[in-house]
Image (cartoon, rainbow, N blue to C red; front, side, top):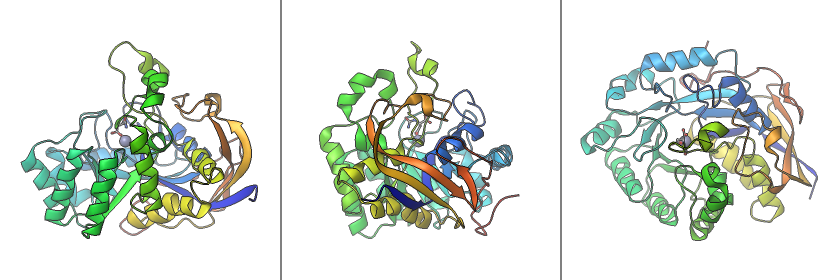
Length: 361
Ligand code: NCD
Ligand code: ZN
């Protein structure tokens, strides 16, 4: 095996950069530095901010805040709520998808009412995916709605064997559906959750070995189309506070090292990583090309994941102490060195808009 591999700039379809409103956890600068250091030159940001991205004005403010401060390119997802439906037509050109929470998680966004769900699915453009947080049985409901109204559906953080099976069947029935898995569900199980305590608390939670095996099988069979980090940073203090533990773990800087480790273990190939982290998300979210953009990573030298070497404000990782083989050595974004294996340079990132395949501003 060669020691160095070259990959196209990675895409993460699922990150929480936390700005505006929770900048003690992360902000556009630290979150996109973490992205670049992790090999991600494009990330798509989620709308569950304290003031959620559910109005055209909130989206505009977010884009303005990000402009000039981001190290990777950033695109946005809009949030689904009863009140946000009125803005769908206005924002659909500016975002990559609509995030719909059908289960409880961080933030106030959740729709359980069937009539409102029908309105969301029928009103949202059929050109762009609805990204659902829908676990277990709830996923069946999301699939039926997408089938009824003809939507593109993207299933976030698939974690259960039964979900993999539902997605497989839906794909066989011709639904326009894509699916994502996270590295925490691929590399950790409920056994690790005991050891990790609050630092292993996330939604969906860590699952059984049987579920984990089903996810890897889903990747091999092309049922899982991409990897999303679900980078959801919270501070150590927040995680350790005696009140309710917030769910979510950071993931931008550990995803590629873990995936490359799986190559070393014979569970993935480099081509498969490129498919999962670049080819498929670019196609499914219709992302603009990034010229002269690539990542170089070392893939044979073992080292231990160290939380002190992270750019995320979280400053911790559930993978601390894990032996990996796979280290990002260089990231080039549109011809400029954005990361040299140690420092992040820039900011060279741009706010992405989809309508013209061009950039905002
Ligand atoms: C996410 C967060 O903290 O924003 N938490 C999580 O456990 N995944 C919420 C989410 O992704 O739904
Ligand atoms: Zn998330």
